Image (cartoon, rainbow over all chains, first blue to last red; front, side, top):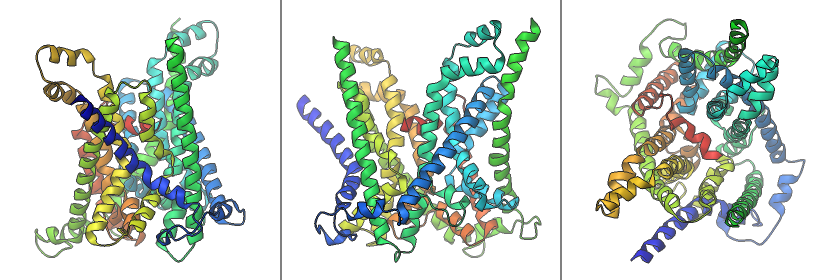
Length: 271
Length: 285
């Protein structure tokens, strides 16, 4: 009886994992298929989609690189703004703290399309030029910074505030104390916020679509745009299969690595 | 003494100013602009025309609203998001429960398996699903299939947001409560219903609120997986803005915004220590 239960449990887990991974594995397999029409079935092994993807003359590689560049810029700015904001809000009076934390939640809970159009209206209301990239960067920062705050805040709560006071008593200026006492203690939260911002920026479609300069493309808008006019670029589409597969391989490596690390930890604990 | 004590506190508080201004300018003012557009016409004059259009575009009288395109879209969106949320819940709860209760040493790696696909760009993931549907022949086959595919897409995209908060609350439950229930004679099932389930309520609420609203509005999923044949409320707003009908779009956005506030207020998402909003953060790292 107990055994049946255990088998059923793991069968369930396996099925759900299959649901999650099957589409990705399916695409990975087809990234080596010598055709860009999947319905045709297996047409033999080929690197052609990878060659197309890495060819400097083609669009996808440029789009991928500029998407990453944008993500790094946005994540950096969001992290700086969010970290400073978190420290400030943490030491503010309760009323300021509460209201700013509540406003900070709006972009997180709000439907992304509402955030996007409200900011797009703001941009057009004050006639800000989209081709300056400022609307795009600020728009994505609206999305990312609240999460930086949420990752930094718990670390501030855990922090030992006496160390800061001690640093001041020992003659450090507030700025020096901030950088050499507070920042190191909340660093894990800052790093988590930065990485989260990168993934949020990389993933974003809606805000990007509403704020980007006309000719600029990110991975999300590029693929979504291909779907809109199906005549353009089955080759580009297939090149993104190759890109998906590459990320998938990277993920597999990370998971194996995490597994090994946690296995080693468990073993060293036993000893 | 007092001087050296107050000065550093003062300077640290000031650090809230840049972000406070950022929020005021780029979050609050844009929302006010939505309200402005919802209640003004092209000449900037106050009007309730767009309120009327929202409620009455299906014909005359009060009941016209129930025949309107907007109403149908709202109902369709509610159906999709309810189904997606329930499916997510029925999949995520057992998954979270099994992982939290299993005796494996590296539970976190197992959990990681469910979360890690989110590192792939979201449109790429939806694209993978679409190619699979095309291959299986269910892509844009019929209205029913389009609906099914949309719901599968939403579940596929939002499942981790449901698994993580539930897992976090289950893992935190003090084992002694369960032991006490068993000692007092409760069966395993009864102990689950009376102890584990109520204690994981916070995780369920948190997960539901992270899935429900996005699956009403994330039109990338519904558009991409159905050859733009299933229209949800998020797409309706997008259509209005793409068609330069800013005032109509703003009013619907305002309705959606109020709906969001209502849900958040009901689920306690504005409370100081609510876990609701942290979910997406912990979801990835």
